[in-house]
Length: 158
Image 1 (cartoon, rainbow, N blue to C red):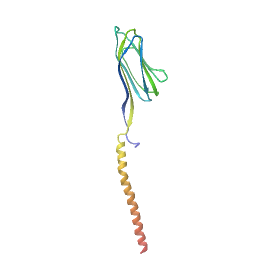
Image 2: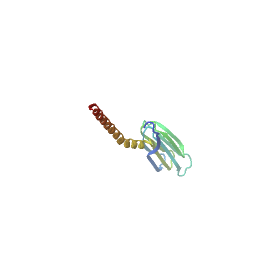
Image 3: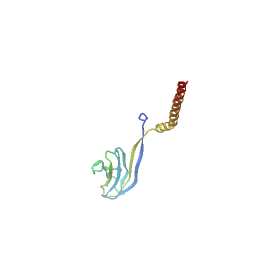
Image 4: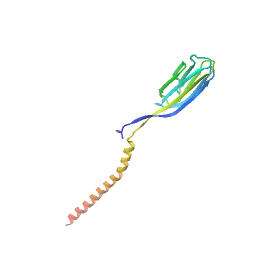
């Protein structure tokens, strides 16, 4: 089993897709529980302000200790991907610094790498199938020893 090849695939644990409307000078936040080595992808797209075409948002990611892990300031588009370094609730915050309402599409995807051994079920099946064969072999060897002792004792009696 130790020599069996290991393959990995990415399994989605959590997903958040939402169209947000953030009022002027307001912020929005979302918490997500991350484990060590999980992959987190954050994307804020299609950001636009009514009556404003300038840079408009700040996007922050905080770790469980409330330290900033990542930030994108004065952005019209934000994208970030990271591997979890600490387990616990992480907080994503989007701040609208403009006095106008801002709309954006927010997407947060949390996934984990899952390892599996594709040949392990075959090995388990072969082990299970071979048990009766080993049992039959042990029974036959015991029968062989008994008949051999029986024939040896008959030879001694003659």
